[in-house]
Image 1 (cartoon, rainbow over the protein chains, first blue to last red):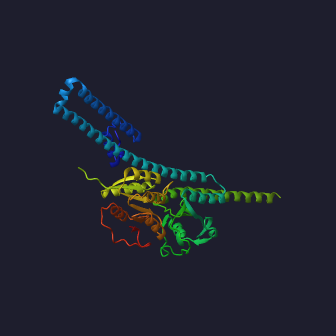
Image 2: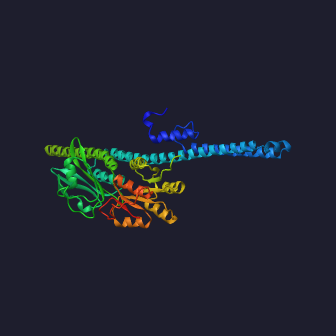
Image 3: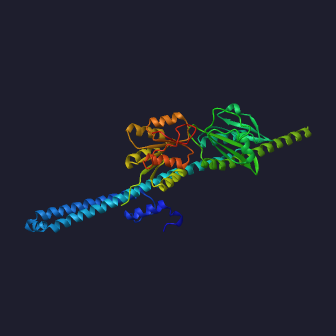
Length: 293
Length: 143
């Protein structure tokens, strides 16, 4: 029995059409099963028509008895009725099979697009996990931005880190002159995102009145996303990605990259802590050497 | 005897949009069928002769523009409503030149898209309240 959660109007319709079309063992969608059923139907049709035609031919040519039998109008009408009813049956089944084929094709299209999406999410998660193993901070920052751009089909973006009450651009793709740029928390889109800790999906031209301090940069981006990098309740930075021409980011992209951003924030925090620890150990060794010397 | 509902092919690679459009087109009395890429779209148009097509231009493999060009070359008269993230005059002119009957900019208002599709299948009179001006509207009649 199908589970209650599987009973969508589409699957119910598909099951009903399949049962009527003669696919009684229907459990999982299969275009091949429909094709087999169609072949059976046409085989049965061919056999029946050949049988009826042969019977009529035999009776018509078979001595005087055949002609007597066939001369009866009721007999002729009966043969015609049998053929007519059978043809109606075949046409009805063929129409049902055609509907099932259509529904199964729709389901395949949906399954394929959902599979693609799952693949994208898996890639984002895998990349996020892989990033957590990187301890070289500058390599990590470049990898975070490059991975985000590649996985989201973006043509550029930037990674900004919090320093005091400012955001510093530490990695850039597409607008190299922005490297090292500083903005105050709350200023522009990235500053707003860092302050509010909320990701933003930008569609079309950004209204400067919504984001005070926004610099007028051309060419304008048609679609972009800006996400806060938060780790242990601390804003580490902001990840900005701009969509390639003709592509528009969706709410789904924003949700997917938010999971990625979470992992990136943890990786950046780890790498920063590791770097600080390494520096501290180096200082201690230096101090020990000075004392020994 | 049941009346045949106008069949509309939705060509879109985003599963969320596919489902949303399928539900909404069904709700307004249309019979939606689906395609997730350009190749499937062309084969379903040829095999199932839909009454209209909702075509996303950004598709994996063969993109929406190529589908539109192929159908234009084949002289297929099926009305096509193009969906694009771009709101510019060049793309609208290109869609018009390739025989599209409507152009809707993403993210779109579902009512606008439904209006464009209903008109494409001839269920609703031509809309007059949509200005053919880039930058002012999300749904534009091209025909």
